[in-house]
Length: 42
Image 1 (cartoon, rainbow, N blue to C red):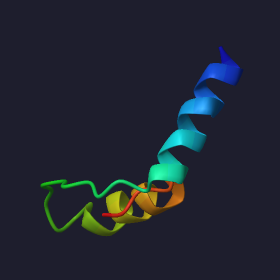
Image 2 (cartoon, helix red, strand yellow):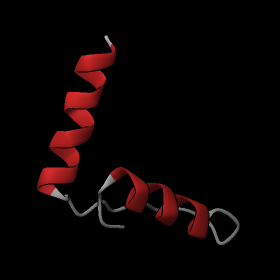
Image 3 (cartoon, rainbow, N blue to C red):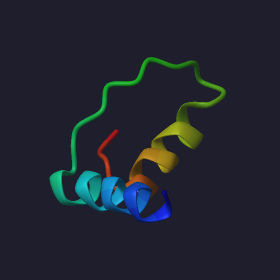
Image 4 (spheres, one colour):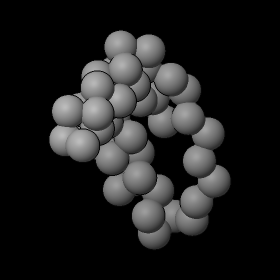
């Protein structure tokens, strides 16, 4: 299970997808930082 999850994380980091996330001003910065930490582009 852990290996499969890690392979998915590596795939996201390799592809670096652009993620559209609609959110409010209270959580905007946190969500952007979480996406960046996962390897995606907010």
